[in-house]
Image 1 (cartoon, rainbow, N blue to C red):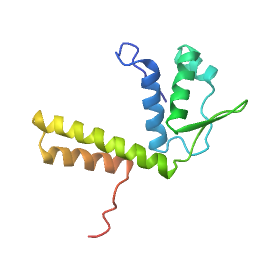
Image 2: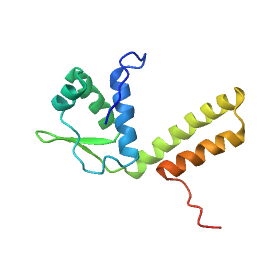
Image 3: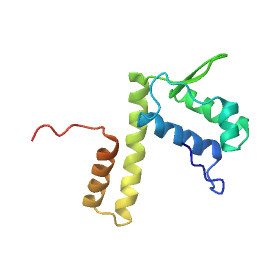
Image 4: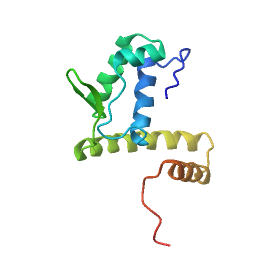
Length: 131
């Protein structure tokens, strides 16, 4: 379920946050589904429970999960205001990345192909029913 690169320069908790976000966005983890407990996940990944707790706290701040005292952490439903703010940030980040990619020689056609591959694998965006 999780692949973390211990040798990466990116902190383990950030890798864990990214992986959990990916699982939530692709709906592998469903709304209101309980996440593994901090202790369980720490044992499975053989990392410090504080690292897991830090990742869960970050996901809660970002609105991806919610916690119930004594019960655990659960996947939260996205709300519109959070989505709007996140979408704005993602679009800005995407503009920066796409600009850099084009500067480095990636063509618009290659970028479109990448986007189409992503859409085919996870869905999203505008449906092409207009043909």
